[in-house]
Image (cartoon, rainbow, N blue to C red):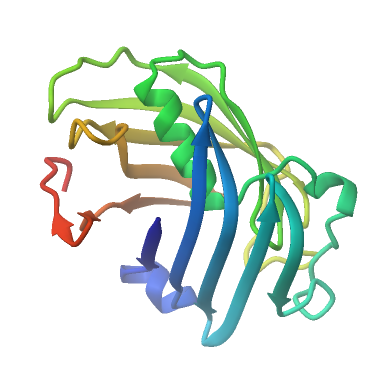
Length: 208
């Protein structure tokens, strides 16, 4: 999987975020297991990167820039990194679970190279099998470790509520996340999918 992300509008003026993230994973017994994750970012004009390598789902090597100390961030203990997945593998896990119609049993421990957080499903709408069907699920995003000591804007320690919209785009694929809505402090924001390519082919979806 590869995800290209950028901010727009006021958020782009404030933080100028750009991200090129790639992950490889295998799906075993309905569970996505990561093998490699790379994220090359720009945040407020500064370059950042994360490289994570896995063996049987366990992190065996990592390269993160800037370091937690240079990033004014709490270090994540090694114990809390165990049995975690990267953000793109977490997204794949959510999509596989949504496609299997498992209700709201999923809880995913995530380590993105800087923060350790949990994604917990709290509510799920019933999904139709028809192509083009859009349905939503609600999650809590709860930071476990790796918080910034002096964040850019005030952040609550209360778990953040997320709403994800999924769309059945192609019978070969699980439902795809096409939109995410959330709030961070006093600021509400959303992330929308603008383009989806599989094997070099653009796939159509209705939730633009």
